[in-house]
Amino acid sequence: TNKAANEIKERIVKVVGEEGKKMTVGTFHSICNRILRQYGEKIGYAKTFTILDENDSDKIIKAACKQYGLEVKDAKFYIAHCKANLLTPGAALMKATKQDQDLACVYQMYQDELKRIQAMDFDDLLLNAVLLIEEHEDVKQALNNKWQYILLDEQQDSSYTDSRLAELLAGEQQNIFFVGDDFQSIYGFRNADVNIMLNLKAKYPNLKWFNLSNNYRSTDTIVYGAKTLIDKNKNQLKKEIVAARGVKGAPIVQTKCKDQEHEARTVATYIKMVHDKYKVPYSEIAVLYRMTYLSRNIEQQLMKEKIP
Image 1 (cartoon, one colour):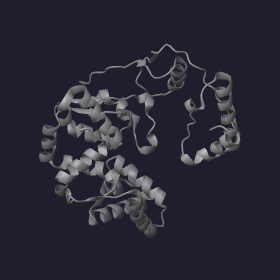
Image 2: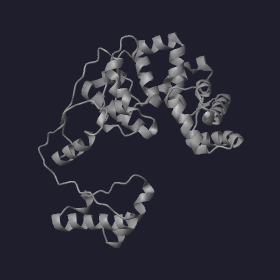
Image 3: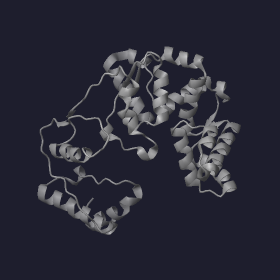
Image 4: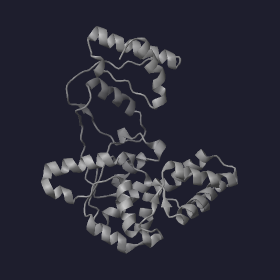
């Protein structure tokens, strides 16, 4: 997020002083936006192009889908997948199977309409920045001169487009520093591809590898519990992970529940037990869930049990 990027910049300035303010720190999207505002006219976009939010984007896709009798969610998934893999509408049409022909046509209509109204969606910021740099050597040279060292965080969550952008910005010198952990790759549903990280050594033959093996965050139980699962990954970068705190920690408890009500009762019972038996304050107990709407049953059960 932009907030996280700004926090990184603040930390850098604290450590190195005023010189740190000369660094460019940002998300992929914010840096691509900056590049496109400066050079976008070379690919037919005015400096004042609009960035669409999801609702506006959906309306345009919906109109295109109507003509082909397609579901909006299917078209959105297809378009996002194409953009994450650097496929323009033309390339998508050439590559499309019979089954995907209509989706490729919707993608073409969608991009044509965006160009007409001088707008981009979030995925376009990355796609168009890569196409711009690939097609215009003068832009590439200007950016390579501006940013001589590139540091890319959370490498395991990169898509093909992210990876290509980093490669272009690093230029011929390849002064690029990756930080990542293939064990923490969880964004496959958002087009992240862990194979990009697994193949970094092949892509950058001179790459030097530094393994940070000490985990200072978690207890022994968590580190070794996670390791027994991750060891089953067929493709991985082999490394030793050590729990450096020397704290064994509580055992991992796995509970199977019949439904959401049963789950809520189980969570509430466990919280009461931890609070009453082990004197853990309620304020130090957290319940994690994937989507906000999943909290409703748990909230109701906690109220019933008079747990704040």
